[in-house]
Image 1 (cartoon, chains in turn green, orange, red, brown):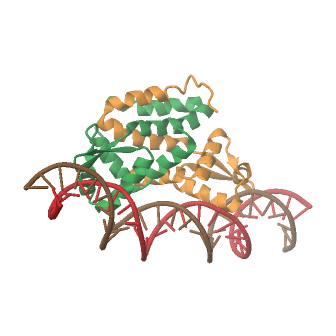
Image 2 (image 1 turned 45 degrees about the vertical axis):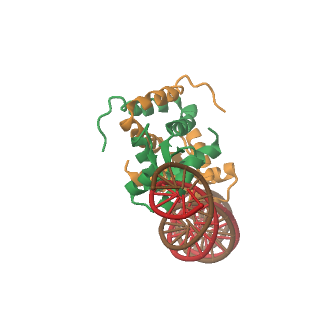
Length: 116
Length: 116
DNA sequence: TTCAAATATCCATGATTCTAGAAATATGGA
DNA sequence: TCCATATTTCTAGAATCATGGATATTTGAA
């Protein structure tokens, strides 16, 4: 991942509706959700949501596939992972020891104590 | 970390000058760097840079401490780590298995094959 | 071919952000 | 006290972004 993609990805997530869209799509992996269902679930006008989906898609965070009349969107977790690796590299390359607590904290995921 | 802080943190990093500032300060941990030095290093007018530092500070990504005439800024890696945990939780809570490749990729840090 | 459903595009408006000049504030030294 | 240094705050113009109404496009069904 190069810097300009990282910036696009960060900007795409730095907006509350879009972050909610991405979260919703992640929770619907791997099936995805039609654009209309996303709009309904988040109570956002369909054209506004379409614009947000376009931003997320341009950043590579989601991907839409036509399926009949609908366009089913899915989260691209690879893109999120790539962003985190990019950010982590900045700190780790300068201070590898700082990665340890980071990894330890992330390692809480597999046990997965329910969140929220 | 709650959502509004996560949004502030993402927005703070989603701007090329600010991302460069943060990166620069990370590379100068744990000593930090005076605001003026940051402005000079990145060739940005000092008041413009001051505004960017303020955004980063409001998001908790940097912290300034007066030291004589200068104000020395330091990166707050805790904030970056908190953001990554927040983002990872979204994907991992729904799909713990997706954390494994993420952790594997991040685990490249300790060996630390030099990057850039 | 005609119609309804699903989504995207066009467009205008209001809000926010980025930028940098000018002025203000804080600090240390003479 | 006076001055130079370091930084922030004030301010305004330009650019970008978010929003949603109206319209266009694509698709499937009758």
